Structures are given as structure tokens and as C-alpha cells.
Length: 77
Length: 434
Image 1: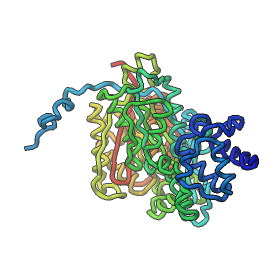
Image 2 (image 1 turned 30 degrees about the horizontal axis):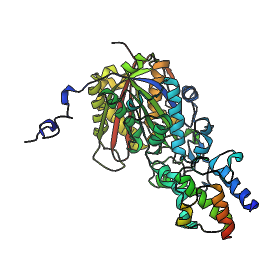
Image 3 (image 1 turned 180 degrees about the vertical axis):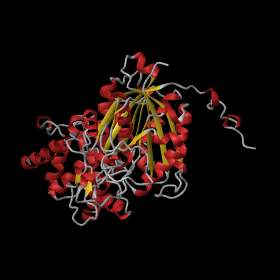
């Protein structure tokens, strides 16, 4: 779990150019991390590559926080 | 019987015909990102020094290409102008556009506020737009499938992305468009923006052209048209407008942007006025998609229309900043068209092509050359046509060969002609109160 979080965090920091301290499980992509809808689509693609998995569009739409992503990845690996 | 728009039902309200306002339009800011310098100062100094920005292409492997040279922008730092997080969202052409726009806005001192936002517009065109982004994503599509194509592909490749992004960066809510006319784009952008202000539809316009197409696909395409110089062994001598041994143009890239403003607006805020835009003409060759009209009639029409628009006689023009691409046909036909427009006086005026140093910036050329035109007036120096060694009997005007010329210049015509047969000429004058 913590390993997943760290890997997700690294990608978010790189892609969204945000301070690592802001990337907490509670942080929302749109409000807290300043991502727009296109940023989120791109981020999902990166995560699919990183974790070698597919996140369906339906599931992706439910993701709003960093914690959502980490939980999703952890439970689908 | 043909009815005027005013006679058509429902249109009389918006059609103002001859009663339209006509405001004076001045230049208050300049910005340039070019192969000879990424600021107006360095661009201008290098042009006057006759320095070439053309060299071997080092961004991709060109060993299989018949053409291996171009004018690449060097030393441009996008992070000087765009937030780091955002840079990846801008195609290189839009990065150049933003760089030049920021420079021009800084010089103008124009502040875009809630009060004036609707009166400030953006009109930055490109010949081709975000081609490199498109190619990168095509490679992703081919290699990894449709699910990996970037959601930013479309907003980055579209030709209007620079105009849109710049309006967002500065909150400019006035008229906004990206004109497209291949190598005439930049001049059309400045000319159209001038007219938008002149007719009272905006108080200020951020206008010009941007291009970044030095990549494998475009190089191959232009090379296979036989449009490019193949002088790979001497890149700095490859672009030689009007010289008898010219063998094609050299691809360049960059952006040239001006802040145009109504005289009233510039005066009201105490802005430094750099020059005035006084004339604009455009036309089509209606002849061939790439070859110019064999008698130069279309180009001559645009120059005459610009003179008429300005209410000037040919003798009032001191200097022509030529399209001068270094192709056999362009330089010959531009010379013929200048002679047709200016008559005997054509032999007395100075005419030079900065493409001899920058290469051909395609859709950005007219923007960068408008900047050079203003600088000519401000500094009293005409940039040379470099590499002019062997006179061509068909090109017999004064091309300011090989050395910058000190000459007081009040009135400049800048020409641009594009594939498609588009012709555009603008006239820029020293600002005088009356």
C-alpha cells in the first residue's frame, strides 16, 4: 500500500508539477492539486502504464482523490 | 441587380458602410523569437551585423535527407515565459508565440484589466500549427494504440491554440482568431488586427505569427517539392535572396508579435509609440497552389491595395522589407511585381530580405518582418540581404547587398506571399502627430 502511494505520488508530482507535501491521500485532483479534466485523463494513462493495468472509464470517473487511486490500484493488482 | 448589404432586410442595423469609424493605429510593443536571436535586441543586432542563424539540423537524424540545414531557434527558454507545469501543454510553435507575445506586452506596458479586457484581442496565426505534437502522437497511436494518444493532442495541434492560450494567460477577451495563409500568415495577422482596431472593434491587439515545423515530415515534404536549398555544405550561404545562384529557401522557425493599439488608447495611457500602421492590402494569385503568378500580378495587386489604403504614392515608400525567399520564382516575380507597382521609382528604393539570415519562418515570417520594419524606422538602419554575390539580370533592384545601410526611413512596405497564392502587404510609418 505505502509502496503504491509513493509510486503514485512520484507520478503526480512529475505530471502536475506540485509540491510533494500536497500529495496526501485526502487531496482531490481538481481542487487541491489543480488538475483539469484532461490532466486527470493523462494521469490515469500514466498510472495504467506504471502499474501495468487497465482502469476502465467507468472506474476512472469515480476517482476524485489520491487515496481513491491508491485504493483502486491496491485492490486490483 | 446586386443589392448592397444595407439593402438586405435585417442587415441594415449592423452594416455601417461608409460611416464606419477609422481610427489611427500605432505599434506599442514588439516581440521576436528567431534563429538569430530570441529577443528583439539580439535579433536586430544580429541582422545588422549580417549574422546567419542557419546551420545543420541537430534535432533529428538528417543523414537520409537531401536537405540537412535549417534556421533553428537557439537559446529560447520556454520557462522564462510559461509556468513550468504548463510548458508540456504547449506545442513548440505556441511556446514561441507566447515568448514573443510576452516580450511585446512587456514593452507596451499594456495592462489587461477587467475594464479593458473586452477591448483587447489576440490574432496570432501559423502556417501549420502544432505539427510536432501531431507527429509524436501519431507515433504513439501506431506503436501503442489509440488508448495512449494524449488528451492534449487536439488542443496542442490546432492552429488557434496560440491565440487561445495567450488570451487565457492575459485575460484578453476581445476579437480572437488565428489567420492561416501559409507563408503570408504573419502579415495577414498584423494587417487584419490593424483593421480591427481601425474600425473600432478593439482598442489593442496582440498580433503576429508563429511556426515550429523543423521536423522530419515537414522537411521531407518541403524538400520533395524542390522548394529548399540543398547547399548543405555551406549553411550560412544557403539563403541568398535575389542572387543569381539561389537554389531555394531554408526552413526557419520562431515567432514575431506586435502590440497594436488605437492612437487614443496609446496616448491615454502615455505609452511610447514606436510606429504607425497605415496601410494593408491583400489579394490572391488565382493561378497555382504553389507557383507564383508568372507576371506577378497578384503580388502587385496587394502592394497597390496597401498603397491605396494608406493614401500614399509609390514615391512615399523608402524601403521594402521583401518576402525574398531565395527561391528562383519568388525573387524574380517579387521583383517584377515591385516594378509593376512602383514603376521607375522601384530602382530608387531600398529593398532587402532578412530571410538571408533567419531563413524562412513560414507563418511567422510576416510577424518577424513587421518587427524588423519597425526597428528599421526606429534605428535608421536597413538590414542587408546577405549572400548577394552574383547579380541576376532578372533581379535588378537595390537589394542592400551584404552590409546594413544607414538611411533615414519613414515608410516601410513589408510583403508576404504564401502557398495557395495568398499575397499580403502592409505599410508601417514613422509616427507623426499629423
